[in-house]
Length: 394
Image 1 (cartoon, helix red, strand yellow):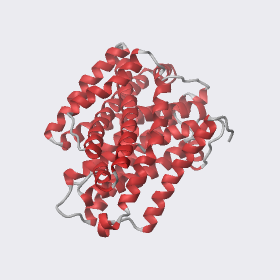
Image 2 (tube, rainbow, N blue to C red):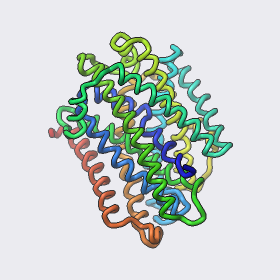
Image 3 (cartoon, rainbow, N blue to C red):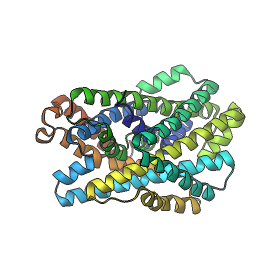
Image 4 (cartoon, rainbow, N blue to C red):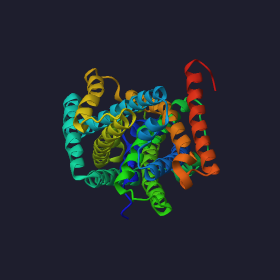
């Protein structure tokens, strides 16, 4: 029990507003047919987060710090640029989602809701002064709110169990599903989470790494990320059962909220808004922590969490002020994250298989092979997306 916690903090990124956007659109447009993407992504996420935790435990350093120590400066700076791009895309999605939550729940104009989001996130970040445990308890409480809200939504939606079973085991990327599938992959396996996890485990690192400690962190990953999978699946299933099966076209998160009330009842819309707000606030907080890990690790530059949060608020405030379609921006941000994944995954695999660095804790061959397959799948899906964007047909 003392070792549990880091993966729960990381799991917030696996059920953030970017996930909501892709899951809601995927369920509304294609029913249950993209559930297999969530299942595959979750399996990938457990493997990668476990490797990240192991790297942090064995070396006593985060993934970015290990990259700075082991790679040439030009490669280190290139990885930093890719990591910052992913962090900015994450920040945009999560900050925008929290602002939408305040806007939907209290009727506050969206720009003012974004400013209020900034204030609340600053308050959550202030808990870091009392240690990561304080942040963990706050975040886990918000995650519990999300879980209970969607359990309630599912009970009301009464989904088709046969459709759910088929969707979990039948891969399908035809008829426009590929773009959303990659968005869901980017929203589930997130680069900033891989960087963050290797730093979070430092607070619980013993003087000497042990296999027992590593196994405890793997168990932490399995429990926390499977809970995140059930939340993501619940969002997509609710969207499929409520919108797709009734032929309702959903083009924004606000519309999804408005449509729920007449279809499932007023309390369902309130539960939806509360869960969205909890998701946005919690994930925006952990994204800022991840940004700090990235900057300090790659460049050895320490910036105040509050200053970083203030700077990374600007793109989201600009998008909100210009009244850009929030759902499209959220989905696009998740596709950008998917393109940033190889820059985090490949160094992670290379470092954790390095016997000189990891000693007896280096990856076994089958673990490295499995991780390489994960990287190959992500690169393949990204290549297919580029091919499709250039006019190719699948």
